[in-house]
Amino acid sequence: MAKKPKKHSSKLTSPKFNLDDIGTFTRRLRDRLDDPNITEYAGIGEQVKALGTVMSKCSQADALLYTTDMLKCCTIETLIDLLMSAHPKQGEIDYHWVIYAVVMTLVTLKGISDVRQKLSTILAEKWHQISEKLWSERHWEIIDGESFYFSFGMLCLEMANSALFNKSSSFNKSLDAYTMKLLAYYWKRAENPHPIGWLEKAIHIATIQVVPATTGEGPRFAKKQQFLETLWEQFADESDPPSELLKLLVKRLRSDPNDRHAPTTGGYILVCLAPLDCEPDMEHQERFMEKLVHSSHFWDRYTTAMIREFHADKNIAGVQLTPIAYLLRAVNEIQSLQQPLVLNLVESSFFDYLDEIAGQDLNRNGEGWKCLHDILFFILSALEHADAKLLEGVAGEMPRTRLLHFFAASADYDPRRRVDRTELWHLWQFQCWVPLLKIYALVMTPDQCYRRGCKNEGILRCTRCKTKYCSRECQVDDWSEHKLICEHVPKIQKMEESLELYSSLGHSPHHALLALLSPLFKFVPKEADFL
Image (cartoon, rainbow, N blue to C red; front, top):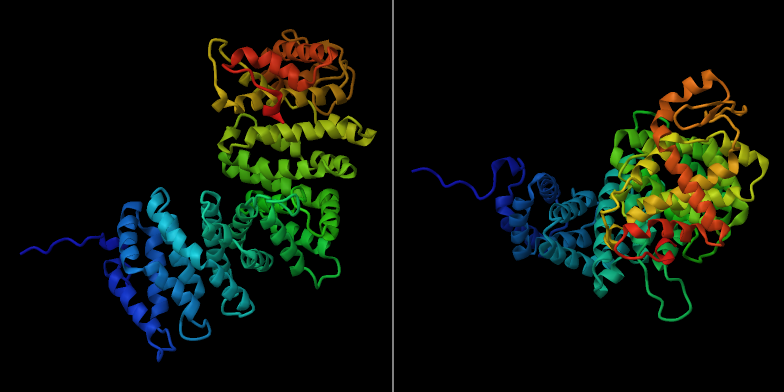
């Protein structure tokens, strides 16, 4: 008689652990935890490791079956109790594998919100005790390691994401001061790009948790303040904490072209370090911002890493722009830092990066187009009162034909097509014209040769669009780029004339663009939509 097939595929079975026996596993683990005579955990560590490994490889359908068993058997509660009860210096318990088993269960259940929510709630209710225990044991070498940093970062990211979409008290309290301390402590000590990346993602999401102010006093961004205060505590023994933090950031922007660790994760830390929306003791913060803005070495490596990362993943551009835009918004509050930062961006090939990403779908990140708009407007703002060195530096980086071509081509809307408010990002895309054209007007003279880097007077014209060049050689050298924009030049000139006309009538660039674009939309956008 043929045997009945097992409930789960055998390929999901570890040599040391079979998920068909999850109930047996949980009961045995619970019995050992409840036995006061048991002080050694030999063997349990391997089984917990196997649980996490199998959960990381199984399908969502299998994960749902396994997790249903876990809920019935209280497996997650038992793993949490193991974490709280076990002494890491005894037996073979590795905190990394206990946390990894929990987090991989949550990760595998993405899309199954009700079950995932139940498990997350169980974890949130115990999280304060867990974080307090881990903080008290942070100096133990058996805990302090790259694999543990990795699993802890993953778990904190899951907790932070859950807190964003859950208003219950358990979630609001879960990302407590101990969590912020641990994230800062582990982030400074981590050396491997993988755990650094997960820790920084967790820090980014955890520190944007907004705590509504019930009175007029106190910070709204309490989580960010907790993190910043704790981070500077980690550098308290250094003679110059801001300089040491900057050295650490530069060190993590590896120059090896084969190393994929790039600013997508490193940029998250920039968002947290920008003193935009909290008011802790700002002594180290202000000095760090000054050093960061003036560090040409940092920006050279940062921009190079951005370009390298974009070549590896074309969909990452919108995400990459977010920390840059956020930092620029913060620097915009400190007038003395505006021009030095723009100069470093210009000299670090940042415009080359913008050319590289031209044409990509920046809306993959909801902030992508708004970030590009804000970046260009910040550069424009800095140029309006810039010294000759900065104006000359930006002029040497213009024109940016690929970027201009993309904006011009994207403006080819069918007038009969009407979009609604859900496609507001199209307006941001159009509005990028305003600062870009104004930057051109500030740094380029009408009679200048159009080839980027040439300062000679233009005496020849393109037969099609009338663009000026100083010589036939410059025109030929520029053709590979100019051919992208040649047919769009009349449209660009018309846009410039329209913006000039509205500005002369006393309207802001925002109003000018709104007047040009309103016929395309079902609703009349308000200037507030752009600010």
